[in-house]
Length: 108
Length: 113
Image (tube, rainbow over all chains, first blue to last red; front, side):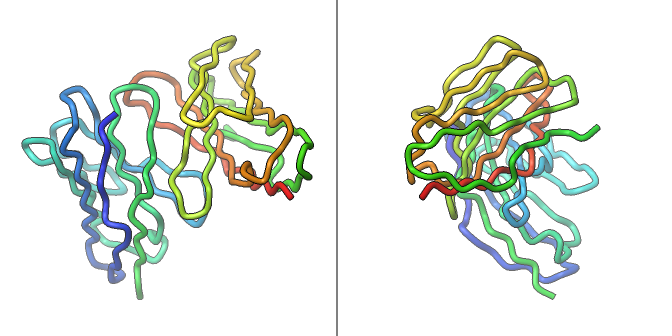
């Protein structure tokens, strides 16, 4: 599986959009980009995934660049409950490889 | 559905003791996984199973064993516990297919003293 690079931490103001970057320059053509988050040592929670096109669901939007070498997870209106570690993962099979992720702190 | 359940929530072991971490899912998922997470780190895959009777090693299998006799259960066995196995253990499952969501249990916090 391709490796990903994420900033170790970022802050966000409550009510504002949070934009979380992820680099995956060695991604191969059949690898998907997944985002999971982990709130306060709970089990990770699925957020969204995509292959080439941008995706949106009730939690977030995923923007993948045309060359697929990077992506951005957008939390449109961050709340205090969105404070968590966010993991960007690329995979083309049933195994996921978790890095250290980005610790996102949403401040009031 | 209860989803993925794990027992116990917490456990303290002495060096050399053994124990089994239980994991059960009620979603009829084919794939099941065991991960460990050390403080400040991401999750590392210990073992996984693609169906009853089939298991395979992940990144960090040493010191652990698994079995998958039913679709629902995927116990993780620690033999001869060592301080290096102090960690939080997460079980996960997914139905199948490359894009299916993995669902995680609440974790078991294990300390080996």
